[in-house]
Length: 323
Image (cartoon, rainbow, N blue to C red; front, side, top):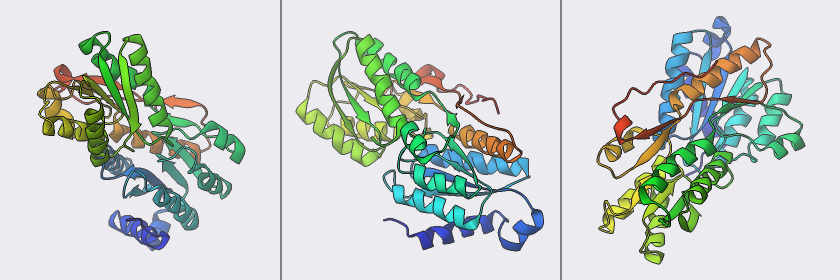
């Protein structure tokens, strides 16, 4: 299901009303209005991001937040329509985690031309596309390649040289998917692993289940899986269990969503990467407020990452990024 522009506009307005920030109330408060554009809220990572952002805004008390997410990871039109609606609503700033690093550049360029501050978080926009559109934007987000390498290295160490592995990639159009693929490739090379196949499952659990089931049929000797996010790792582990190979095939992921905590404890997931999603949007909001006050943001503003294995499952999830 894809939402129409009209439906998204209604959804955005409804969210604003729930947060006590629409119409006359907004004008009376005279607080900056920030639109938060996320990816699929079916993914726990982005649910966590939204919850963290809303809580942060409530604590700040000096701005209005209108959050919107996609129906699915491939529903890029919803993000584009959300940006267009924010332009129409004349919000002060947009904080965006783009689902596609190129497709979101033109509407965001239009937002900038309309005088709206844009903050790019989580997934970096394509440099060539930005240059073509004549825009320069800072990126607030993690080192996805380094994080994937950290996760992949745990698998490489566990399997040893010549271990037979596959990679389940994210959305090919997203920079973070490309960077995580590069990080996994680094682990394959440095660990002298045997990469049997690498295919996308577009960040989705059920698609990853199908993709990996087909991989397992083609390569019954698979020993390890590098999944570019935990949602896909869940689908992979489900397929492993269904094939009666639980414990025989090792899996690593990325995101440290709540659903994988028991899998880390019981060893079905070797490792994942915490990129502190609840704080990432909060950081983006803080930077948007700074930009609205005239501060110029440039380059890559790195946010933290942390390797999480079974021994770290019970450790407190806390980190801070410079704001």
